[in-house]
Length: 99
Image (cartoon, rainbow, N blue to C red; front, side):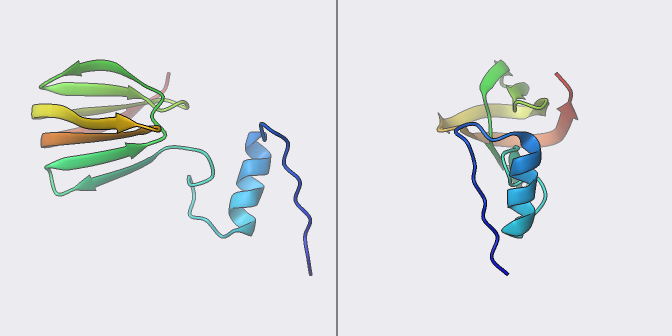
């Protein structure tokens, strides 16, 4: 059975969720943020819209639907571009919040 999907220039959240289910994407991959933490030395955050706070002990990011805070020692933003932030340092805690 073929399904026809037409998306306008700015699809609504329900349409993105439907498209994600049709394509069998994991939850959260249809327009939200995605976070990967490697050991306790690096974190990659996709879907970042901006840096709200930044110092070597904590970084707070706007991810559209909320915030992500990374706490630790010697933290730095290694790269930031196209909605992706790479944080390096000694990561002790990752916290999620609502805007």
